[in-house]
Image (cartoon, rainbow, N blue to C red; front, side):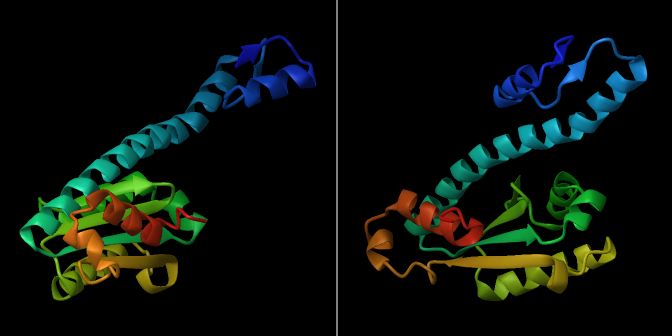
Amino acid sequence: MMSMERKKESVLKCIDLGAKDYLLKPFDKETLISRIERFYHVLLREQVEDTDLKDLDNTLLLEVDRANRAGTSLTVLSLKIKSQNILKRNNIIALKNNLKKILRKLDNVYAYNGYLVLILPLTNKDGFEVVKNKIVHNFNQIGISFSEEINLKIFFYPDDVHQKELINNYNSNAIKDLILNKLMDTNK
């Protein structure tokens, strides 16, 4: 928001209405450029994460439904970056793109709210160990200690679905929600 209005109430109202910043007029070119640069990465991340959340939801539903109907395995995992220093050095989108390079084409990686969520169709517990080793090696190469700086949560389908009637009734939406709740602490 750019304005000549200096009253505290006006500034707070603009922020409440969704402004990311409040820039008082007159200002110089350097100030404007520095403010734009500061928020460009934030806005880009928010756009990517909003898109990723919708895509994550749709893809997860599709993969759960496919695994349920075909009787195949599916592994979904979340990687929560514990350290803000890591996020400053390696932004979450760069980490996402880095992971996409080492996974199979049928695997999916999403970034949302500090999480990286990986959907690994046709992957059981043994297959997950292979993927985990690749991820750990990849993160170590870019200076991230996997065991210390990443909170890993895993959901193995169908093993971790304790309400087997969800599988028997092909309730893919409920299974998808169960997975997201376990992996991303969405119920907190």
